[in-house]
Length: 166
Image (cartoon, rainbow, N blue to C red):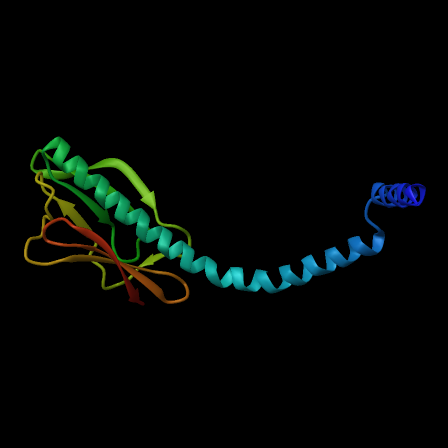
C-alpha cells in the first residue's frame, strides 16, 4: 500500500514538471484577448474625464502655489490665461507698478480647453486674498466630451473645484 502511494505521488510530480500544455496556453490567451476587447473601448471613453480632472487639479495646485508666493514675497501674484482660446497659462508678479511674467508658462493637458465664459485671470494680494473683492472668479475647463470642471477662487482666497457642463 505504501509503495502504491509513493508511486502515485511520483507520477503526479513528474506531470507537474512538464509545464503547461499548448491547449492551456491557447485557452488563457483567448480569455485575455476577450477581456482586452471589452476593456479597451471603455478605457478610451474614460481618458477625457481623467484628463479633465487632472487639468482642474493642476490649475488648483498652481493657484495655491501663487497664493503662497504672494504671501511669502509680500506682493501680488496672478495666474493669467492669454484668452479663452488659450491652452496654457503664465504666472505674473506685481513689480514696479505693473505685472511682469515670471517665465513660467505651463500648458493644459491635451484635449482640455478653456470655456468662453471663463475668467482669464486669478490673482492674490500679499495677504493671500483674491485681487477681485466682491465676486468669485471662475476658470471653466472643458474636455472633448463636453464635460467640465470649474476652478473657483472665492473673495477670501479659497480655491475649490466644482462640476460643470460645457
